Image (cartoon, rainbow, N blue to C red):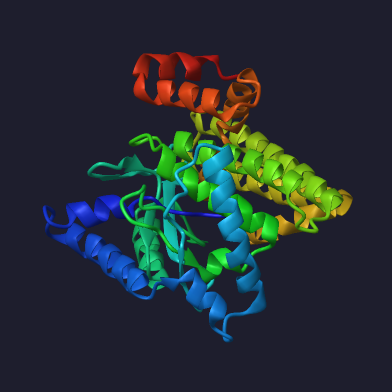
Length: 347
């Protein structure tokens, strides 16, 4: 699952006013961000460098087309951004920590000035993220640490392209870049699920439209298989989350709760193995099922996909027109009452 984090804006601003243990966290965020920014070079220079791998070159050129498409056809703020490149050896730009109580699907949140409370905490150093996870493990939380190929500064900086973003299939790179641009267009303070589901839906729809108008030699049947695999994966996770929610609402001893939770997680693993034999494209999710499969990990899926059908319905109601869609979404974002009513209407 692709991950990008939007916590850095708050870190940069808040470091001047926070102290104590929080200062260490914000300090690493600022240090990591500025280290990244100091390595930027114009995309043209990266293209002219013979050491730049061909796959990266191809995606750097493609990124320019995507940015023009996003600005001209989707109403996304793509002018003057992602015009620089940072060469990195790591497979991730940041590492994100998520946590949840052992018997609850309510995520642990961390609050930042301006960004509000979000259900993840980002680190530029993987070991620092793992140490923070171990501290929460000792307190009885479920935790998960995953790498992110990109993060957004919500328009406060001209975010660069990075090697982890470029080392993807062409279609996946288009999707990721559009996803990041959505965060620059609209960010609702303190609502991770709204922000991530919105970016997921817009990026997926935008990628489909971009591919339809550009000859990228994409295997369309494989693309359809990817869609089917995603739907199957989300159905498995949704069913398991529903079963866990019912379990956590019961009044049984902790030992019994743990046993039943483990049984449900085991059934999820078995279902995955069974369905991937029928749908080989599910192989793409092997990494997810090799993880701990706990509340924190399952919550990440809910944040990125939980409101996708609702946003799809909004776009459909607008006849597929982005201008109308953005008006509707921004109205929801600005009007707490409209937002609450909309949430209540979601099946």
